[in-house]
Length: 549
Image 1 (spheres, rainbow, N blue to C red):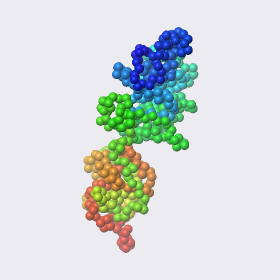
Image 2: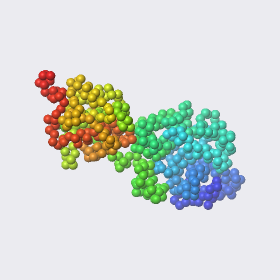
Image 3: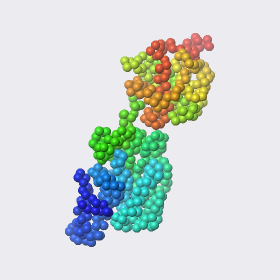
Image 4: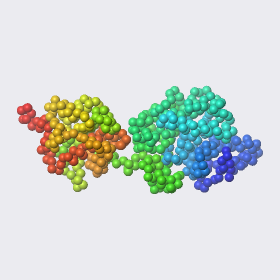
């Protein structure tokens, strides 16, 4: 057993240490150099410790940082997983790396903190920038590093050429704005500084080393808009690097569309992945019932009941069990193969600013679509649904009504026109008036024979309504969409499915209302060709009537 920096160390079975620390340090204390020559024991010991700090990442974690509060935490640091992870990081690529590790598995301790300390001591003239979602989050990492330089007598003794004897008193910069250690250059960038991607991005600075840690958070995963903003800011921050510099990205998944998934999918100009990826789930095989690689079995079992277990421990950002609505289950069909004789409805979901506050949390776009339902049912009692036309966009009421009128007039026979009615909205009245001006007469009345129908939320939880309305027909292959629907609107629908229930859901809500109409209309007993239609549509189908008018 040896003691370094006041820390006792004993080899642990299964740990692939980089060096034989006990032999190296005992030889140094005896003044015995590698070739057998004798040297000043104190000088040789400091030289050996300095070499270990610069060359052995786990040595920095265990003997320099001491990231534990008790004996249990100290034992956890001297663990085969931690030792192996340190070796893998220091032996692997230094640039364009993405490390996605299970939570509480030392990723930030090893890469963001220990490796940064090691890099600074080896390259005092270089500049490191730590980037997180917000600047205060990045400053927490910098504070841990600052504490090491301020309090570690081992570091001060081994690196008097880099570390100030009294950092707070002697350093030209030692604050939340950055840390400046001893350096020969006069560059303006601090030795280490902390920044935020969406809050507190620097300008005019260029870093030799950039670390991105905690750019994806649990709170941010509840807002797709925030996730998209981080992705944009991450791309922009690449301009803060320099030729010959490098960067690492570290984190844990929180959502199947979060920034780490975006970074994982980046390709270079040849189509190859940009990033070298290290994925370290909490179990050996990445499965819930697998053997834990670091946690005790009890700790792993305790976490299994949490909703975040798949993302944050198994590192599966899109487990099938959590995605009940998958856009890929919608079938693409050529327009020519959309069946004839469908019961066709046009549905309108209003934007949030056009209705009551109940709608505002759902989004601010209008969604208008034509859906055809096959009247006959299969052996499981389901009819096929065909999305024939779609328009989804933010718009004021007059613009949306114009789009609705255009779709209705080009849509052929429409058996039902459903307009969402929330609160005191009168959109359906304006739509009826606009259609009448075009010679299309639609009446909104509480009658099964009325073409116009009001779609009402009826106090239902919208997320549950959408899921219950779409999941069964979707998962049973009963939803189709026409291949000539504009791609922009299909991509919007795809985004809604992908990010449900944390993003806008206007088009999904519009699709869901079709189930209300299906329930209200006994389609099995309908003769589609003889369903009452608007007077204008009957006239369109009868030239003699049109001439009479």
